[in-house]
Length: 401
Image (cartoon, rainbow, N blue to C red; front, side, top):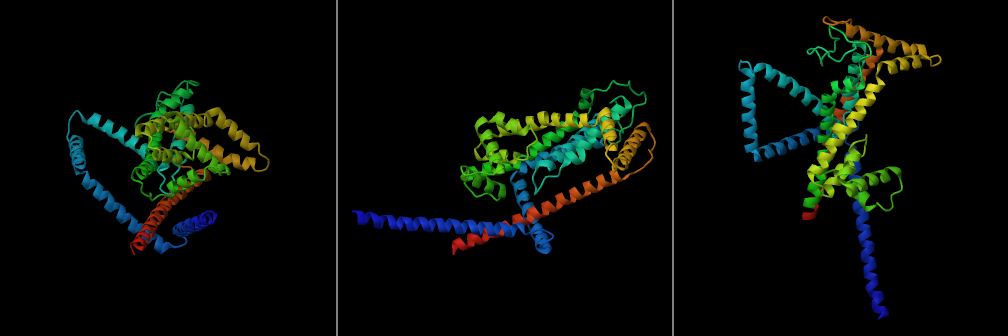
């Protein structure tokens, strides 16, 4: 009996060792393939990267065309609606003033929603549109409100150009609430766009869980590995990710709301977690929308307004001037920039003197660099996606042989 038991245990040990060896070889192969995909960047393999990017673009266009054809009824109704809107837009009548008003509001809201989506959609990396667009817009409105003594800027040219109203305002009549009310629409639209940008990870993880298929996404693979190795996690980043995952999974709506209401770089993981555990769509999107478009947006907006309020800015400029040696040289361009903004605001009507200093020049170049980096990251992401398609096709061919 003992001999028979020993003989039975030996094959099991061999099988276990063989299984571990297979797992190790699969893990090594995946790691090698991942490194090969990550090497597809413009500065290492420019020709292959651009070639794969074009091929992936064609595949995506074909997929989207097929999806539109499958929903041709909805597409037809949308085209009919567009024709009706175009007819109302082009025909003369008393309704034109309402049409133009709706057009301005729609384009203004769509602009900020689009910037919010770009900030969080995750095409390789998000474009930091709050720092580049919304933050400077709130700051310029804040500076103008304190300088003009009013938020009733003439419209037009507001918001394309901010000029002080003709009548002026009462000194000290500006409050935080009045400025927050002035920029509430664009801030909430931007927050709603960031909430919409969080949907792709949710839908990807939900579809993968329901179908049982292996999704074509690195973040989801890392999420599954993190769940497998949850007990042995030691580093801070992994523990933080696990904390977000546990909060969303156990607390539900209020856990998602808490994660969405604070600046949280790990919120993509919340979307993947909700999709993986089949959290209802409106629970996830409702909590995300309230957290990002209402709570978080008001916190960020309040921070920018307080930072750029008149007395805070003056204190900051004087503080810069108090820095030994470098202070006066740094204080001068800031003072010139603020003075130019004041002259520009009081120059209602005509063109203000275009006095550029190095601050505005540096900001323009930073915006240009960040936009270029965002575009390049999209190229890299799509090229690496096509490389993964090739690797999966190669594996499927090997299995059929």
